[in-house]
Length: 567
Image 1: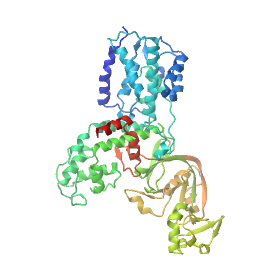
Image 2: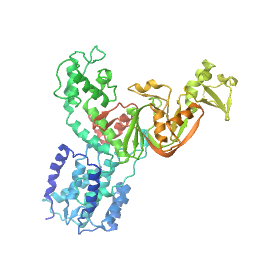
Image 3: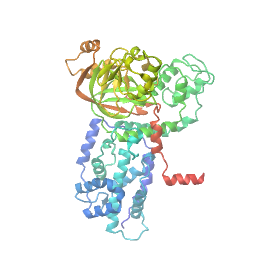
Image 4: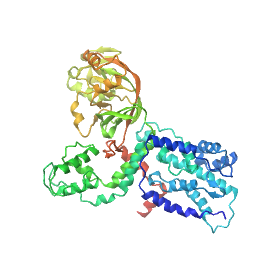
């Protein structure tokens, strides 16, 4: 008999995978031990072997797998061309583990194509005891190679991203990470069931995955009464109102308030503390006052939160599983900059990012230079849209704004220019001179890039205290620019806080190269788990989530046609 009745256990395994609580993410030492165990695991070789011509013929018949041809060939070359998914004529436990892994994957990975259905048809022939047709060598070769090819397709979606289009079309200019699934497939074929310690994903991916599974079980929250302020603008500490009950119930449901808290109608200190925790997790001012921002966030349906997590998990498939050491990370929807020493968060600051009409671009580069007392070379778009109209209304505008005209490298008196003849482009530059009124403040930080984006100081300090901080022309304004300058120049003993202040007091532009370039990532994440293990959400300020969701959750064309025909 060449049948394998145990295949019927797959359905049970899939259900268990969907309902069980995922294990805690292992620490660095456990991960290292897991990797060592993988390489110490003796390979279970099959007496069946492939010929290189078998692999070539399979790839010729299945051009959809050509992108993974090097991975497929390399896998068998490392095994001496021996089968990976069979013990004799029987599917190995490793093969069943893989099929369970695919069938139990979350729906965001999308369809793996008709090839996966064909793979299941082949597997069912082994499980079907009523099938009396002999299984040929060609059958085993087809099934063996189909399993391997499907692994690479599955891994590419799970760890490389479901969305296959050029990410620049989604305004994401951080390069996709390089993919290498050799260790993963070797471990799977060796019979390892728990691949989580060596999965090539960012740690934040696993944290969000756990929160996703939790939220799948909490859709009942949407049946709770909504928080409705009615004619009130807000609920403040000490206020008494029937709406407090709905607020209290939702804070308990989301885990920000203990279930044993008082059930009264008053905004007491315990409730206010829970509300402040909720506000912190959602980027709101933690003042313990329930206003429009709180109402919007606390009434957001759980299904919407689930979609937000899925969108951010997709983004995390694009980025390296290990972030660069000493990275400076700006998360646009969070309006925060995070500075890392090695891989540990050193400190953070508030930032102001581009307005919705002048968005800050998502990209990565290296910070190389600090400029003290910078000139602001005003972009052409601002000259055209803002400065020209202002100068025509007020001939003293440039002088009042400490600006000057530069033509051919020479400063030209503004009074010698006939401004009325210009309606669009101008044959000269306009710049703002160094000083406290300069729009770039007293310092800027350069990481040369095609988008002309940089970090800088600003004389407009009041914006950093706002909840929403999308106001700039695209560059990133820093809440603590002097602290960043001192921090970056700390390795150079020639630079101290006093020497920096001395240079800035001269009001002359000065360029300073960093001792070592620092990697910079300008990212866009609207859901994450923070260092206190709290799930955070932020508004989709640029609607990047909405665009990615259209790609991620779009129906296949044939399903769209079916839905349309029903309508």
